Length: 117
Image 1 (cartoon, one colour):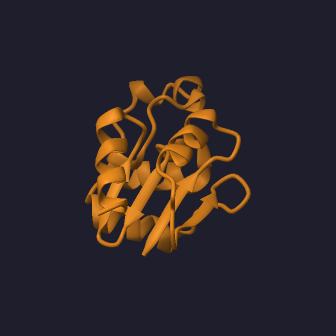
Image 2 (cartoon, rainbow, N blue to C red; image 1 turned 90 degrees about the horizontal axis):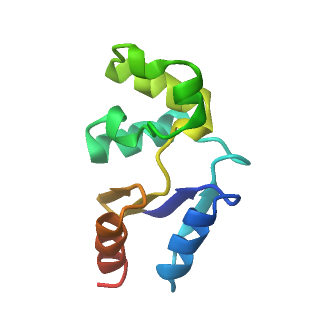
């Protein structure tokens, strides 16, 4: 499976997708227009082994809801990601049995290596 979960309105996601070109055989899913399903989230979890790793603590709603003050469990992270797309750390890049989460230079470089090897 080769897939990228992203936001089409996110300039960082767009920059990374452009940097990763060519993306032969990749499916791109804009999570705002096509929300992630529980089974897709389970697939991401099976590769990352953590809902917290998939969760964006930079999301505005994270601050607005004072979630930092709460002791969130893995189940809470899962429910929040399914409830609101902004809680998914973006982009999430899946290359066969590897997952790359977020936009750090290290993650993007590793994804690029996996895609073009």
